[in-house]
Image (cartoon, rainbow, N blue to C red):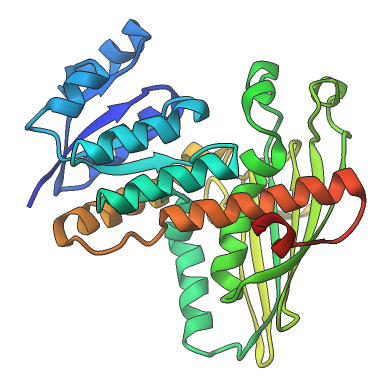
Length: 334
């Protein structure tokens, strides 16, 4: 079965998903929609797809699934619209910035028996997936501590910061999802610290650029997350999981996996520059997984509930910083 796609929003992440769809044999990009005409035309030229309105895509008989890459404040409305239209939905994170709006959206997904997958591509990275398989095979025993490092090469533009929902909802949310995935049990408490160390303008906009978070589960497992909007050496993405019988780690990706030794020491090529190159394979695997879900009617690997629970952890982190205390997840869920 070939799954016929439409992409809503063809900015940077929409283009990434367009390339991912093109890389999957069982997927076909049929249409795109974007208010920026030149961006839509560029996608049409590259992929040979139609340009249609959102309403036309919702009514189309030749579209099985949509990929939502529009601004965050449109996500929930579009998920509901396309679930009611009988289309499978892949939506970039987050579903919304408001937890109650996410809950009402997921209720519509359930009522329509819709398929919704949330874009947490890191679970589909080959190295991270191999790390998770190692844990599941019992090779390091029981998971005790998880350490996640995610640092961007530089901060995004100010206009993005102002509508992102803040670093915890925009950036750390990926680490929250990975932490839940690797810990294997529910988080009980969140403790966060945040500073503005990279760009004063980020602070003026009410956000942070340097954060650390400690998650603790009911049984006492811990995950430590460190995020920064500045890493002059490249896109820094690392994981280490410590268990009762050993540890497993996933290291950074470099432009080439070589090491040069000379009279001045050991040298390696630079890190990959940002998420588009670092996670290119993961985005393709993510779409391939979604295609399998649509074809088989199986549940996606990253569900709407995963999106909701990652946002719950983000809300707890925000509250922890604001009130300078450990926050129980039960406070957020009540």
